Length: 100
Image (cartoon, rainbow, N blue to C red; front, top):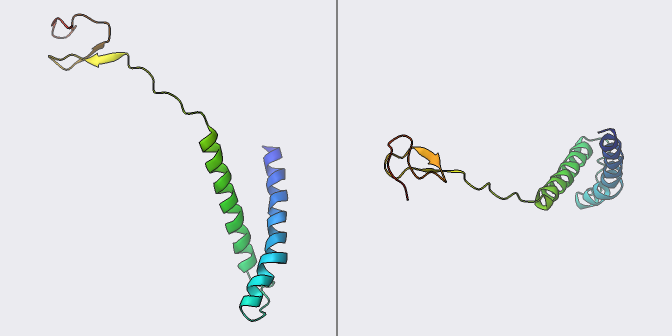
């Protein structure tokens, strides 16, 4: 867990640098050379980018996980009384009917 926290902090610094040095100057040019350095928008963009990246990573881990096969059933229903019986049963313990 400590390794994850250290990587997360380093990743957060990279994202902060990306937002402050690359994205916000471009956005500032689009809005008439505005300076966003003192506004809270940088923090929101940092959060949104980190959240999106984490979402993508979790989604990829879920795709890579092996899909488990459904367990084979060990029981079935009696066709006469609809109680649950074993797959290998030849007689229902509830209604004593012969089962094929």
